[in-house]
Amino acid sequence: MASGAAKRVSKSVVDWTKFAAVCPKHQTDMLRAVKAKHDAFINKVYTLPESLPKIDFAAYKSRLPDPAMADRFEKAYAALSIPYPVDKNNMLKQVEEEHQENEKKVKQYVTDIQAAAKESKTFLAKIESLPKFEEMTIEMYNYYFPETGYNPDRPTFWPHIEDQQPYNPDFKYYK
Amino acid sequence: MLSAFRSSALKSVISGQGAFKVLAVVPARQNHHAITKQERIETWDYVNSVYFGPERDMKNFPNPTQPATHEPVRLGIVPQSWFDFMYPKTGVTGPYILGGGLALWMMSKEIMVVDHYFWEIPSFWIMIYILCKHQKVGPQLTKWVAEKYEARKHVMFTRPINMMKTAETSNIARLDRLIEETETVKHVHQAKKEGVEFQLEAAYRQRLQTAYQEVKKRLDYEVEKSNTKRRFEQDHMVNWIVSNVTKSITPQQEKESIQVCINTLKNLAAKQQAA
Image 1 (cartoon, chains in turn brown, red):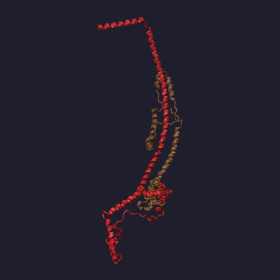
Image 2: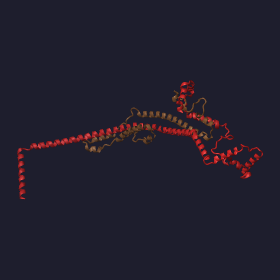
Image 3: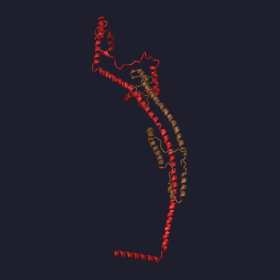
Image 4: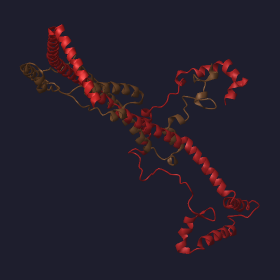
């Protein structure tokens, strides 16, 4: 029968609901394609017998002119050893390697994202550290928000709006 | 605003005068860059350290605060606390007596001189008192000032701060979702691995199926072969016997047998009629 070393699979352990939940919105079509393909593989497995089907040799024995022949067939059939197919291109290893590489990338990616999230959280905490507006003088306010104060290195023209300053390249009347 | 720049007066300045243009191309002023989060944090940390740092003696010199409303008053303008200060010593009327007596004393000593300009002082304060107490003026004025203040606060502080907060909160939510989405890699790996395994399993099961079918085919062939052989032998035997029997019948025998048949039929007919 099956060679003992090979691992038999008969049930899918992929949690498609969770997969769909974590799948990015723009990759839903890809997910659907993968699922269709996967289902096709599984369906093919389920249409075929799990183990070597039994043959009713007793019936054949009575029908065959030479019962010894049936016995021979039975013996040979029982002794039949069918090898489990070998992963010739070592696909499983490739998949594993790819996964390792992806894991590395994901680790880096998650670290970057967590750093960004941490910066955002710090910023939120810093906003809370600002004094109340009622307790700020104009001077304090300008120190906390430097863009609001008058900057002598950067004189502006009336109406003192950035978009309408001559040094703004987008300003229509500059050209 | 723009119309001012469109007006010919300013246009002539822009196109005609060199000084304006020279001002305009100073590189330092070319772009106002958006302030990043990091810069904001640095600025705020520094300013916080200046205003509320360890060197600041918050105990003896607390941060001055502007109360939203005035303290309680009597007579519209005189602080309630002054009356409360004198109450234990002089009773309710004490402060009024003190005020009136002080005025009388100052008048008698000619410190407060009742000249032509004297009445400007009480009349000014009386007018202020009436305006404050008038239902149409005082509360309306308070409301107007409060509205102005709120609008200013909203534009200068509340709105930008809330925008920053909302942006950061949504950013954190987005980043959390991104981290969640990285789990896809795990599922993809599992699906890929299973895909390969299932294909191998399918191939194996296909082999089993083929072996079964081939063995069964051979057995069926043997059975069918023996069946056919037996059928053929039987047919042949029957044909052979029949043909030999037919051959062995002579014309004389045939005639006799037909005669016997006719006689039998006649006998039958006679019996039928008699009945």
